[in-house]
Every structure is written in C-alpha cells, then in structure tokens.
Image 1 (tube, each protein chain N blue to C red):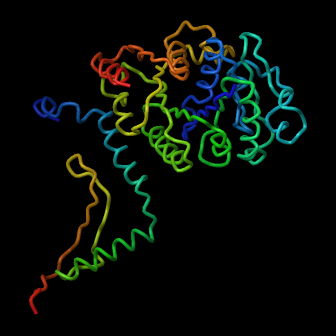
Image 2: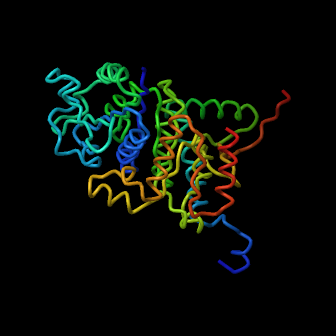
Length: 88
Length: 265
C-alpha cells in the first residue's frame, strides 16, 4: 500500500479494526438466527413481490447479510429479465 | 442472611473462568465475606488445582447429589483465609451426573450460610452450563479481547437472557494494553460496543497468574500484581462499591473515557 494511502486510511487497516468489523457482521448473522426454511420463505416472498413488477431470474437470486460501507445490510441481488407494464 | 449466587461463565474455553472464580472467591473472603466456590465442571475439575486445594478432596459435588455424603462433608475449608470454602467437582463422572434442580437445591441450602456462592461454570452451552446458571442470582461473563471469545460470549449473553437470568456483567480478561495501543488487539470500548453489557472489570494479561496457578496460590492472596489488584477491584464492585478502573498502560484517552462512563453510573 502506498505511503499516501497509509496516511489517509488511518486505523481502518489495523487488525483490531478488521476484527471488530468481522465480529459485528458475524454476530449479526448469529443473532438473526434465521433457520433455512424461514430464509426460504423470506426469499419466496421477496421473489413474489418483485415479480409483480419485473420479470426476474428466480434461479439467479442471491440474498446475503454483508457489509456495505461500514453498514450491516441484507443485500439481495436480483437479475432482471424485462420490465412488466403495470397498466392493463 | 441470604447469600448471592454468582455464576462465572464464558462459552469459550480457556478464557479464565476458573482463575476468576478462584481469585474472586479469595478476594471476597479477604474482604471479610463468607464464600463458597463450587466447581461445576464435572469430569474436568480444575478449581481445586488452581486454588491449591487438590490434596484436601474427600467428597465432591456428585457425592452430595448422590446422597453419599452431606453437603458439609464435601466442603473444603481453605486454611489460608477465614471464611473461604470450596466444593470440588467429580473427576470420574460427567455433566449428566448433576441436574439444574440439584444445583438449585444445593445453592438454596448454601445461601443460608454464605454471603457468596461462586459457581465455576464449564465451557460450552450444554448440560454443564445449564447446571451452572440454574441457581444463579447474577452471572458474570468472562471474555478475552479476541474474535472467538467475544463471539461465544455474545451467544452466552443471548442464552442467559432467554433464560431470564440476564443481563450479565462482563469481565474482559487478558487485555494487553501494548497490543491495544498498536491496534493489534480489540480495545475495551470495542468489546463493549459489540457485546453491549455492563463491564464489571478488566484484568490485564499477567504472568503472575500462571505463576500463581503453578504454586496453587491464587494471585489475590499474595496481591502483588496488577491482575490481582484488578480482581480485588472486581470483588469490591460485586459488593456494591464504586471503584475506578485501573489505569492500564494503554492510551490514556481510552481510560479517561472509561472512568467517565463508570462515574456516570
């Protein structure tokens, strides 16, 4: 890592900061404790809602707990095929 | 007199439950309390050896539960300090030999005679842990500032809250201020941010603890080290006194922020 990068990245690359972030994420996953059938149910409901508005690739959906710029987020990646028109 | 039953647990093994039980019992006895320490780690007993009482064992906790002996017969009186007793675990049985109700019955009897009943919980979340927390009025959770220990402590906190025995109080053990300063170890605030429970003490990593265990003389009995002072301070807080946290050689601003936190309570 370059000198300037080290100067401005501050303590975020210290192993204790890494440890803290990893712990926060892993504990979020531990604490949420969604058993696989419940995760499946949540997934199916998300698919059903999104499918009302867009055609999606149901096999390609990926839902995970992850960190996005320091925030713990539930991230759903939903591949879209084409948009449905609402007006009938 | 109705004594308090305090269980010392952690989830993770090897973080210092037995050492803490030995030193806190000793510290409370030095302060004039009548204390009995119980080793609930059936099958893997260690409290006896850490306290240096291993040669005095005649009966153990399982003998009491099985009705082989009376409770008093299993109690070893520590001759070095007035008011300190210990009930060892069995070495040849396992955790199924004792039930949570057995522990509750025994502790109800002990409460009448002692100011404090300290229970050294085994590691894990199974039968041994359940036995150890069943009779608890208060639970102290020990963690070290390391990823695995903190993760397990979090699970334990969740479990004790589910049993309506929470919230617990935390001891951060084996802190290394030099590593914290360098950013190579989780700081006190980091652990508290993550676990979000009340801190009752911080014990620095200290060679004197290993030496004490080698000799079978708990550090608080000798009280010449930082770790022993930390344990003594914890016993005072257990007794309801406000004691400022030790200034460990770490970044001053951390300890100052810490003392402010304590004083607000």
